[in-house]
Image (cartoon, rainbow, N blue to C red):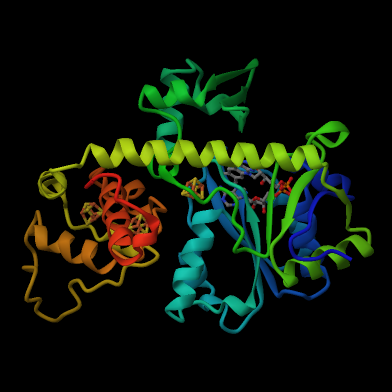
Length: 382
Ligand code: FAD
Ligand code: SF4
Ligand code: SF4
Ligand code: SF4
């Protein structure tokens, strides 16, 4: 019987899922098992749309459709927490299984705190996350740096520090470090992200640490809750997945890779936040002077509450003025200063490419130091 804290290798026993899965296919097999056995009413996951740059959130109620969601889309930077709140009534009346990256999970937990999502009705299958690439930038990077027509790419992956593409006529990999030095690679918020293994989910699944004969053929699963243990136990018993204890050497390797990624994240925080030292407010004023007040940053932020043009005259912001006064942005930064999760949605979806996540993440990090001094000194103001 599996228990919270166990670490194991797991793989699907379904050949169709195995063909499409990123590694062992355990995630898709577990989602399928949960749906077939009515542990949940539906599954929220990501599937490939038109091409590899098109990650589509999809709700599945027929278990046989789950195979379409297998595989990882690294150019898919969609955030699932708002989808749950906006289109699925925050799981208040249905049980839903969701595949979550660290930011999806943090968004869900923030919305659960506000009673916008019912965490108890969710089965959260976490996937480790080294980062995502913005789809628009990915196309540009593939054209300009890889010198490949982005429309011919049918598969992409991030492996051993490289971004690798498969396209009609070949495959190519370039080191992420090199790409990021040239201004491409992972989204800037992902570089600063420190939530690589989503341990507040029910399971945390990934490819780090799968070694030996199971390398590439199994998923590394860390069991993070009793709900997760129950799912693994039942799915293994009914042969929906195969399992074996994780190799101790593999556990050690996984720990080391996670540690290295966290160090890299700290390095990026220091670099990005130091660039704001002494000029945060003037940088905000300058950058937001391009704002066209499209409200996308407000609409797409999991923790932002729109206090905008709701028919009432605002004391702080004049209606109809473009660019809006800096107060429009200051008010937003102020009310999310203790809860920005650095998901990058505001920045990614800003019509004017304003580095909003950089600002809100810097302010959040500063607030952490004030409210939770044990977290240590702010990296940019001290
Ligand atoms: P599958 O059975 O293939 O299922 C994959 C699941 O992931 C599906 O439910 C699918 O809907 C979902 N999914 C696909 N793309 C996304 C997306 N963009 N956002 C949310 N859900 C998505 N593992 C590591 O150990 N180290 C890493 O650095 C790492 N980086 C990752 C980065 C991204 C963007 C993603 C999506 C995954 C990453 N993983 C990483 C996890 C790894 O790629 C596999 O998802 C995991 O090992 C499970 O494998 P599987 O074969 O069981 O999954
Ligand atoms: Fe992954 Fe973190 Fe980026 Fe989310 S913010 S996509 S969890 S690296
Ligand atoms: Fe995400 Fe931006 Fe909102 Fe922060 S402010 S939670 S980065 S959308
Ligand atoms: Fe302004 Fe960008 Fe926000 Fe739109 S998304 S309101 S342009 S800051």
